Image (tube, rainbow, N blue to C red):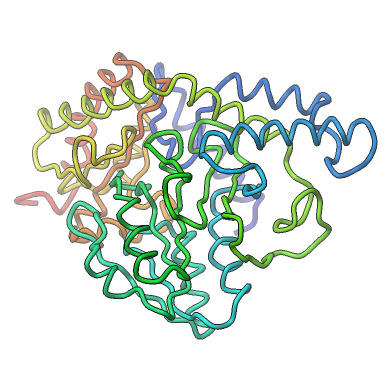
Length: 410
C-alpha cells in the first residue's frame, strides 16, 4: 500500500475516533510526554546555542560545542562517570547496537554473548545478527517475575565470553535486577568479559551508579526520562575497546559519525536535571500511582494477572496486567475512545500480532500475553487521572470480553 493511501486511511480513522473530552497518556514506554523545561532548552539551542556544527571553528560552532559540553557534564554527573566516557547517539536503540556490535568488531578472539531471555529487541536482534556471523549466543533464563537466574549466569561465564548484556530494569514488566551481583559474578569469573547494561528504563528511576559497579557499557535514552526523542547515550568505560558501526564524517566524537543533535541533547540534559532535582518527589508520586492502578484494577476486574514483581523489586513507573478473555489490541482501541492511551503486548511490536517474548519468558500463556496492557505513570499524572482510568477500565474490559470467543461459555 502506498503512503498516500495510508495517509487517507489514517485521516479517516482519526476523524471517526473523535476527540475525547479527557485524555490520560500512559504510553511513555513508547514515546510521549516531555518536560516543558526540556522543550524550552531545545528552542534556545535551535535559536543559537545549538544551531551550529559543534566541530566547526566559528562562533556558532563554538556556542554549539559549549552547549554540548555542558549537557555532557550534566549527564555524566548523574550516572557517576567521566564526561569522556559518554558517546551520544540518537536513541537507546542505537546505543545498544553500538555497545554490542561495536565490541564484537573491536576484538576477534572471544565469541560468546550472554543475554537474558527478556532483553529489549535492540539487544536481542544485534546478538542474533552476530550469531549468524559465527558467534555463540547463550540465553539466560528468568523466573516467573523476570529475575535473572544468577546460578545459570555464573555457570555460563568463561574465557570465551565476550559480553554479558542485562537490563537493570525490564522495559515491559519493570523487574529491577541486582546489578551489583550480576557484575560481580561476571567479573569474578572472568575480568576480561564485558558487562553491558541497557539502562534506558533504569536511568533516574532507580539507584544506578556506574561508579559503584564494574559495568563496562551502559545505554541511555532521552525520551524514557521525559526528554525529547532523537537523543541517546552510551557509557563506555575507559579502556573498553569499541569499533564504530556506522561510517561517515566525524564530529566531536570518534564512535558515532555525523553531526550531533545538539538541541535534542540539550533537552536530554535538562530532563536529567529535572529528574535529579525532583527525584524523591517524582519517584514517590509514580510509585503511589503505580500501586493505585494495580490495586484498583485488581479490586474491580476479575481474571487479571499482574506481570512482574511487586514493591521495591518493581520499577516505580511500571504497570503490566494481563486481562484474561480479552484481546489487548482491541482493549487499547476501546480505551483510546475514552482518551486513555496505553500499549499492548510488546511495545516494540505492537503493530505485529505476536505475543510479547518477555511475557512468554516468564511463563505466561499465549492468550495471557495477548491480553496484556502496559501503563506507565509519570511525574505529569495526578491521582485524579488515575481515578478516571480506573472508572473507565471495567466497562472497557467488559465490552471487549463480551465480544470475545475466549470468555467462559463463549
